[in-house]
Image (tube, rainbow, N blue to C red):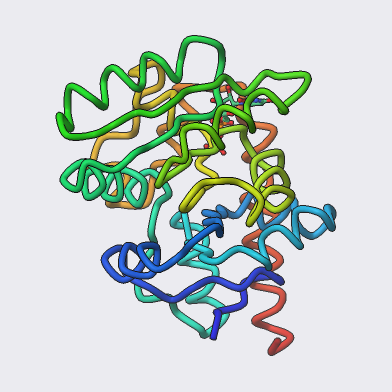
Length: 236
Ligand code: UDP
C-alpha cells in the first residue's frame, strides 16, 4: 500500500527497510521524487507512469514528508535519494559487487568513481558514461557487457525516470535508481547541505543559496504546498 501525495504513491519505509526491499529487486528501478517532480508528474504523463511503475518510490525531500503529514497520511521517514544510494553502495562494496555510474557532464562520473573507490575500497565500478548523449545504444551495450548489480541513472528529472521505465527489465542490471545530481556530489563538484540544514528541513534553502539559478524550478515547492493544503481542506 503506497501513500498518495498529489497523485504519486510513496512507499512508507525507513532507509533500512528500503535497502532490504532493494536487495530483493531484479531488473526494476527506484525513483526518489521531491515536490518538484510530483508537480511535474501532474503535467507529464510519461513521468507519472514512470513513477507509478517503479519498484520503489522513496520520498526524497522534506516537502513530501510535510505534504503527506498535512494530508493526514504521515510517512515513517523521508529517504533522500543520496542517502539511499550511499548506503546501498557501502553495502555492495562490502560484498564486492559491481556499480555502474551513468549521467552528469563528461568526466564527472569518472571523478565520482575515483572518489567512491577511495572511500569504499571493496567497491567495483564496472563502468561510467556521461548523460549528454545523442544515442544511448553504446551506453546500453556497455551496461549489458558490465552487468552491474546497481546502476545509478543521474540524468535529472524527468529524463532519468522516463529512461528507466523504457529500459526496465531489458538491461543486464540488477537494480537501477534515478538520482539527479548525486554524481556531482560524489565527484565533489556540488556540495550537499551541512547536516544541520538538512536535519532542520532547510536543504532546499541551502541549495537555492548555492545555486540561485534553481529558483524557477523551486517555485514549484510553494505551488505543491498550496495544492496539498487545498486538498486537505477539501478532505481528499
Ligand atoms: N543531466 C544529464 N543529462 C541531461 C540533463 C542533466 O546527465 O540531459 C545531469 C546534470 O548534469 C546533473 C543531473 O543530471 O548532474 C541533474 O542534476 P540536478 O541537480 O538538476 O538534479 P536534482 O537532484 O535536483 O534532480
